[in-house]
Image (tube, rainbow, N blue to C red; front, side):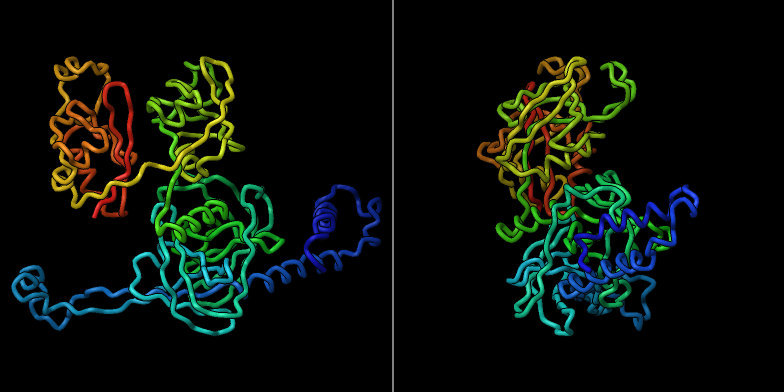
Amino acid sequence: MRSAPLLPTLALLLFTLVSPVPAAEADLDAIPYQEMAMAVSRTFADVSKKIRPAVVNIKAERKVLVGNFNNPFDIFPEFFRERFNNRYEREQTQVGQGSGVIIDPAGYILTNNHVVGDSDAIRVVLNDGREVPAELIGADPDSDVAVVKIDATNLTVAEVGNSDLVEVGEFVLAIGNPFGLDSTVTSGIVSARGRSGMGIVEIEDFIQTDAAINPGNSGGPLVNLRGEVIGVNTAIFSRSGGYQGIGFAIPANLAKNIMNSLIAHKRVTTAYLGVETQPLTQEMAQHFGLLAARGALIRSVTRGSPGEKAGLRRGDIVVRWGKRDITDDQQLRNLVTISTPDTPIDVDVIREGKSVQLKVTLIVSPEEVVVEGKGDRFLQGMGISITALTPAIREQLGYEEDSNGVLVSDVVRGSPAANLGLIPGSLILQVDSQEVHSPQELRSALGGTSRKNYFDIVWRTGRFLQRARIRGI
């Protein structure tokens, strides 16, 4: 039996199992329970047969330096490394395992960045037992999406579904290689959608599921009862390191957008709105006449940006983006980042207590600037000097009393900073989402960017807000 006609049968089965009607009145003997249970079982089996050949085991090799424990002087390792040219260290190859799913007959495989992102060599084991080398096409640390490619024939390709249509309560299957156990299938339901603020990656819009996900499942597909990939399994919430009923998957629509960008450009191109937001507190919500602190408060709008052209204003509260209700400013930033440029999006805002409907058309984020170094070296590479913002300087430059940031005191002509539009008197406000209030905080924020290969810097010149993406090397 195919999965398409299952839903009425499954609904009837679940209804009869929980119905409060006495058995005599429901004539339970006339209902073929075993047949209905078998229909559910066959559907799970059909989906498993359909998707398992497209799921692969990924072996990622990494070369690391480890201490030589035969060194009798290990009590002073740094001293001897500096003087004996690391002769007391040796190179070792570590092999990590994860999962992936074939999504294109050309051999493209969708997986996680944390599975293959910093690997030196990758091998893929297909469901039929073949083991082939793979090429890393691209990896995005912010979303934890990566794409690898293999050169092989007779590949089974998984169908990617529309994750926007996923509903809480749907049955799903997770397929992967937990603990190296190939082609393991587990089942559960969609527990929640739009999970963010988990601190797992920068871009979070997870599907939460209670299907068992364990180490080794990372990169494997989460599929619906039509056998469509609706997510990429990426993380678990656990106090033990194993399954505890809370797993997270990257929505298929997000993963597919990033995958296409990685294949086409070797990097991720993101969308740009041109607004600065802040959390909406309960006190603010009461001030604006709202019942609950749900939404994203716009603090400023960049001149000439898509946000300004759409009519967004400072003080607007964004409560809906496309078909998604906005709970907080972090969710809005994530949705903007993963939205498709040049496509109109309906946006609902609360303005002075009234509902206003707008239509926003995003653009591709401005091209990245490449600057070498971190901290002070980064500032030198950018061609800027900084100083603290004092009350006297704040008043002299005409900034508001509550303005904070780090003042740009000088800009080298023709430097990357000058090309971006920074001038003496500009205020650097943020590095990524971290606000900076002093030169030391700015240097510290710039020094901590090694966790990924790019970051955003936000600054204000007068009343105009600007943002640029900087790639550090």
